[in-house]
Length: 114
Image 1: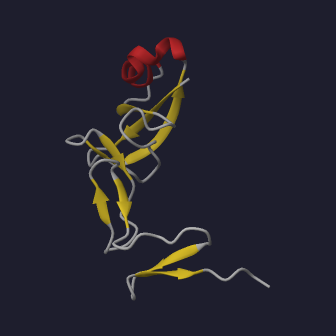
Image 2: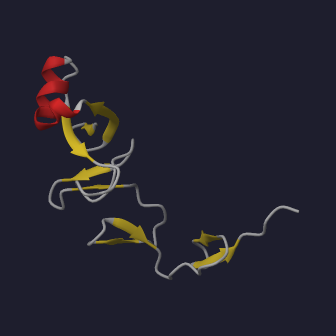
């Protein structure tokens, strides 16, 4: 099965639908005309082999990068041009669960509930 994202005029992902394998080669036409859904449809993939990231509702399609990009999670994050994913200015420590603290621009250890 192939997956296609519908984008609006601002390139915002509205929804993602599955297209049968035999219609993958003409997914835009199949969805817009055959199923009479209209709109603009762009193929995406779970494993990121097509357009770098799997499209999700609220993501943006960047045609110059040919990639789906999620909304920026924090003002300090920067876009990795290779992966088109947002990165914190400080790498996340490994091993335990951390969450980003924008005020301190650092990762905070998440304490498990007792």
